[in-house]
Image (cartoon, rainbow, N blue to C red):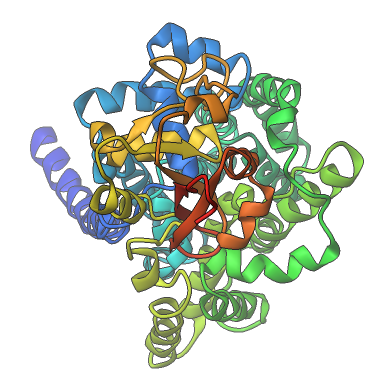
Length: 489
């Protein structure tokens, strides 16, 4: 009788679990697939090529690089170092980010269910999947999709822990999630400010557990933050932000201005007192998750050093999706599909909409086109000169040995302490005897005035005869320089 009773009690539980896991599996697969589609069409960006440069080095070489630049990305680089052992195609490099996007969508769905209902969770996951910003990072060979997934995991683990604060394993799981968060992207730790908003109303019994767990989990992130601070010269290009950066938040969150403003408007509906609502502290926590990291990053930029870059805030996007899911689940049934349709309509077209970001120059640069221009016009004996030595990474990836002679290269691989390559600085001597030199630089043709190698070539008797622009603004310029005849003709 005992065995029979156990089976009869377990059967409904198994059916309930299956009913929940089925939609979650679909959510994860769909989100990962949407992110992955077209990941083989867009040219790798300069940042993605930095990933490629870092992870194709030996383990010792990667460690040497991390001691000089991008050390806070070392966990991601170490993972990608192993991943690229199995292939180096664009889609393969970007696949981990697509899988992280699928994981984030599943966590968003379950957290939405915990806070409101399964429909709310599924709607939140649908919103997350539909955003061009999510697809962009989901096919970006950088760690930002991982940061968003880790932020969702940390919030999910916090909810499980406060459900049963007496269970130590759940607090250990929360600490582990926070540790993962800080190891994906250090500024993603700013999302933890929202966890305090959630925890305080629970009282002392929760605070005495959440604070030590959060502190322990932040140790790895603190290490990477210290490493990043020591290497802050690598982000010296970042300017001090103006208050106007906050007006650009919707575009960062949505990917396009239309999608971002629609999403922000729908998410704001979650604050209206109608229908079934999530617990007040969690609603406030989601708002804090969305808005506090930008404010804190802005403050850090003014008090310590300029570090405000909108992609550093991508870990806030799951919060907007969750708020939107809660709002849509409280609307009349006919209104939710209309709101989702409006979001999709604003997400597909336009600059960096779903169609645009999957184009050849969806990452601004278009290295394949630049390589094709040179290969189709090059002649035996031509030379190539790069305006910045690190641009060579993209041309080697897409062109390799088919390119003209690399007359400035002074070595066989990248520098051990940067993404650049060792080069000669005597352009005139390096191009002696050459009649045609191909030059590539970042920006349009007008940017040539700021490229020292162009000045050196013109001083050595070369003149530009043709130029092409590859990619969107700023993109890059490919120019052909020909040596002038002694008579000046």
